[in-house]
Each structure stands twice: as structure tokens, then as C-alpha cells.
Image 1 (spheres, helix red, strand yellow):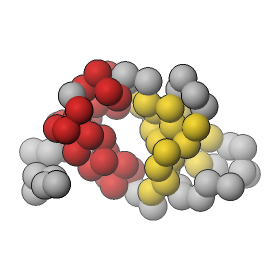
Image 2 (cartoon, helix red, strand yellow):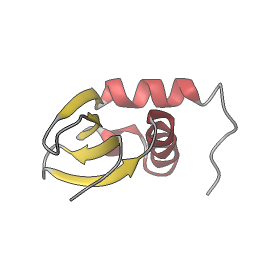
Image 3 (cartoon, rainbow, N blue to C red):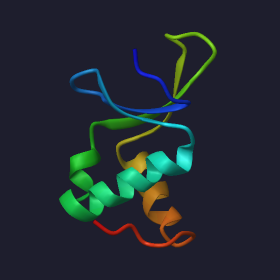
Image 4 (tube, helix red, strand yellow):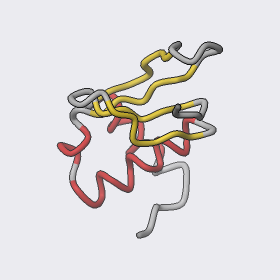
Length: 82
């Protein structure tokens, strides 16, 4: 079972590949991934918010709508370094 208030999912495979306590941490991972692999690598990714029940996941953003706020957030925080 995946835990975390926010989760990153691959929409093609249906696999969760990240769990975070807050949205900003998930966006930081996206920003680092875009810097390393380019925005196309995140085309099939989605950030979801977990609800009270185990299967209660609400999509927040996916693909381009996930990458754009992650890159915008980079102006508010220190850059991610590898």
C-alpha cells in the first residue's frame, strides 16, 4: 500500500512511483525530472491527492498541467540540484 498525502502515478502503467507529505515536494521531483529528462518524460504522469479512504485519490494535475506549475514553482524556491 502506498502512503502519502500526495502521490505520483504513471497513467500508462497504473503504477505509483512517488509518495509525498505535501504537494510542493511532488512538484520538486517533477522539476528535477524535467531538468534531467525533459518535459516529455512526464507526459503520462499525474499528481494525485489521497483522501480519507485508501482508494480515494483525486487528480490534481497530469502531463503538461503537471509540468507547468512545477517549473513555475522553481521561481519561488531554490533550484533543484542533482
